[in-house]
Amino acid sequence: MTRRASWSPLLKPLALVVCLPLGAGGSDLLMGAGLGPLRHQVGRPFLSLELQHGFGRGSLGGWVAWDFNERGGFVGLGPSIGVPFREGWELRISSGPGLVTHDLRIELGLALEFRSTLQLTRSMGPDWKLGASFSHYSNAGIADHNPGAEVLRLFVSRKL
Image (cartoon, rainbow, N blue to C red):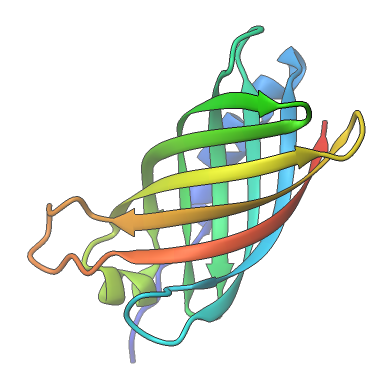
């Protein structure tokens, strides 16, 4: 009988990190779906929840994310930077560490994985955005087994 990792130890710190910046404003909740991994095998569908928060008036920010499917999931956080390039369009780059559950750890090589993301969004009014992102998950060579995985995601974002 295989023992699976529990999400409960991760939920309390994640809730704290998510709730602290909400009072400061500038937060968006992203809700998405995607396919991954794309490179090594047929992609499996997954769901994603992500909180992005901007710091001050600049394009610097941070993110907290939970990506999951029937095989397990990833919970992580890190910094991001956004670059507006046309009216209503933004390109955002982010990276940061996270933890994966047992089934994904077997596939990816380690409980600690890093997610690097390139995201494109289009404003659909004052509170909504539509977007797509491409993410790469890797343990950065810390483990002997480091196949990496890529995922493609479509999402809708709501200003909080």
